[in-house]
Image 1: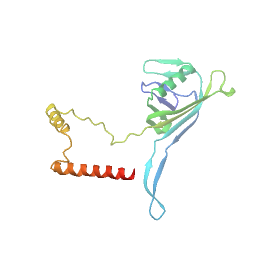
Image 2: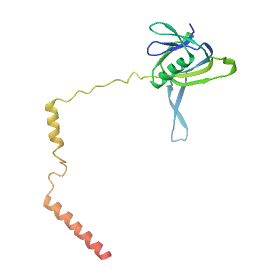
Image 3: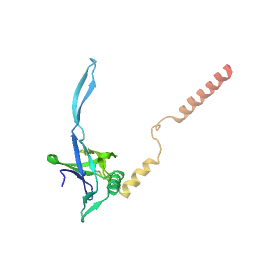
Image 4: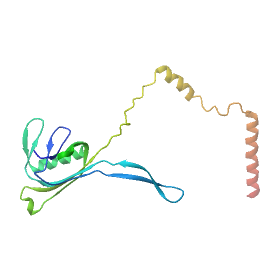
Length: 191
């Protein structure tokens, strides 16, 4: 068994026939913000998701699934990888001494063919990125309001705006109609 491989959500095992390079990048960044003096200050340090890259060659592969071992053609193996990407499935990546990097998505999948790969072999590059989930993110369920609460709210919703309550309606009507007449007179004088 290779020390560089990944498994899909069904437990299927995928590895390259010959892994020539494995790269694990653990990026981070410092956040900066400008201040009044015209300088920038660093106020935080953010850990970014890890990125794993596998490079190598694949030929006819043995894929170990939950049921039995079976040999797949290179074309079928490619189709399986494409389906994992289309379904946006998470994979778990196993990298020798780093153990497992869980919840990764295949962000790049490149294949190429040269004379060094032989008749049935293909050069292959994978890039997989870890998906970090915040501990604070939780699903929140809002209960359906009880019928007596729905009735209580709907009566208030249909009653209209209560902001003009207490205004002398006769005074309001006199002011608005007087202003309209005055505006019409000004328009006629200019015309």
